[in-house]
Length: 150
Image (cartoon, rainbow, N blue to C red; front, side, top):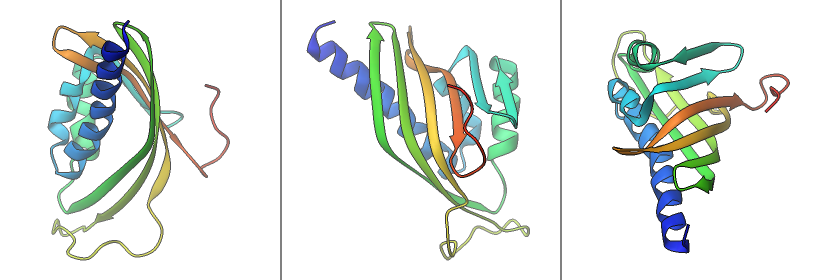
């Protein structure tokens, strides 16, 4: 790949990382599966694993779109390594501030104290006819026990 093609691939994958966070934070979790391939995997090791279009379409919105939820995913330290014109891997840090109001009313004040959780996303990307998509997204939580083998 020439340097411009590599840069464009890196930027497209980085944009997926940020788009994922924006959709969650704006209450559009039902659109998150659009960022994945039909055979993708989304997982939180030891807690949940969704595989394939049907599980992603049903599982992501039901777990992440909650009435009264105000959240902000802060993504940083994004590093994308392009392996080929159609494959890339990446790691990014994530900090999540979240407030869930059981009455279903969105928060008007930021959550007090520490973030709900922090960790990193470990991603595999593939280039499809529709552009770059997640093939595998794994969320590793920091300070939540021993890390999984990677």
